[in-house]
Image 1 (tube, rainbow, N blue to C red):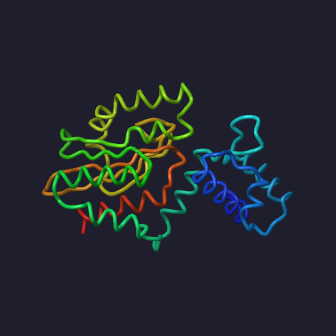
Image 2: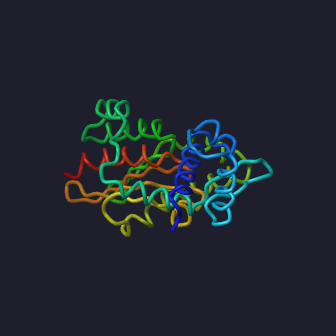
Length: 231
């Protein structure tokens, strides 16, 4: 069980890393956020978080990056909040203008969501009818700009249809987060996926992004889609 203060610091680190994609130092936390604790205490708490596997040092910089374990804790709390903030007003306005129950508007909606989320969006209808958009968004993520990472992402993109076909039947209905090691698209990615039934047929909608994706915003976007099909 992680202590309240450590959890608050970890949540702040995750939020900062999601926003900046840069390793987070104790100094930047103290200067940017009103944590109401001394820099020395922040450093000590970060050392404990690192020892317990919640953050790690990617290279010789002073900053730390959240681990999959940290994101899991973050998601547990996020998903447990019943009165979670609703979709951003600007996101909703754009989606309300675009969404309608026809294939053309589905494609326009998927394209808009890929822009809003910064991820790749796919929509699979009846298992054999699939389209996706926003592939370039993955390649533009800072963590995927190294050669090895680009190759990893390319392999996933090449197998996208095959992977969706493999998981289509086994996915549970409703929304879920396939995080890191549980993600069929790759352990270096996260996917927020929604399976639903419409006109007595199954469909799957998903947003694929880095582990650093904005889970709160993207979950609310997925819930928006869910509410259009599941009353």
